[in-house]
Amino acid sequence: MSTYKEVKKITTHILQEMKVRGEKISMLTAYDYSMARIYDDAKIDVLLVGDSASNVMHGYETTLPITLDQMISHAASVTRAVKRSLVVVDLPFGSYQGNSKEALVSSIRIMKEAEAHAIKLEGGEEVVESIKRILTAGIPVMGHLGLTPQSIYKFGTYEVRAKEDEEAQKLIHDAKLLEEAGCFAIVLEKIPSKLATQVAQTVKIPIIGIGAGSGVDGQVLVSHDMLGINKEFSPKFLRRYLNLYDEIKNAVEQYVADVKSVDFPNEKEQY
Image (cartoon, rainbow, N blue to C red; front, side):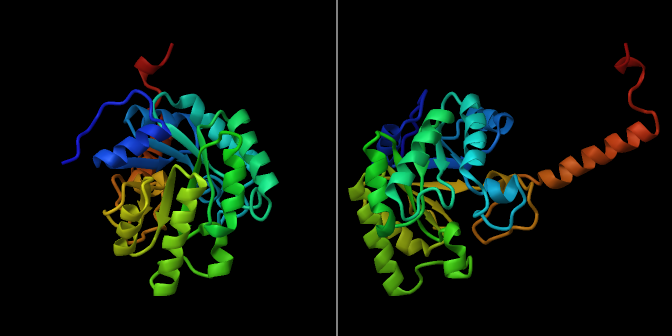
């Protein structure tokens, strides 16, 4: 039976302890100060400043266009809001692929300018050299396997990954490599739950799932999806906890009506 332990500040070491004792890790994306403050107050364990900001904050179709400067700006806003959560920042597309020196420089910029706690990057064997180099600077690294959105044009689809045995075996192999390289955790995105459970049981580091079933060590969702700010995105793995799109729209429509009818401001709302 898992036991919930009150923690004042989440660290990579605390996440490891949570895995050992069977306490699930909660993780959400965050991109700005005001929302991050709320998430931190709600005791979310990990806040991911995701490159999904490219989609939900900047309106791009993919995660590819967002720049390192933009990611640092989002991350700095989040870290200023946080007292308890561990803040992990995505290395954006083009800031680490194929060049371990650039990967290190990008990671150092994120840690210095945004005062983040860790970075995350996508890929397996092909990024191991970069991971090792980033770790030489004492920067914690979270891995990301399965569906890797920065490789969308290689895959050509956002469908479930690793359904075939060959890709499943490569994913298990890559997870072991990431652990050996020194990653403190790995996100597994959109893969069969049986495979995700197998990976979580094979490696000693925490495995965080998104569309990877309940047999992993924690869960992550994009906050805009979970809160119902987005309406377009409805994958099978998403649970909407609110319908903020309609609630905000209704509130704004009421405000517009009150302004037009001179109901707002009323006598009590004037000096």
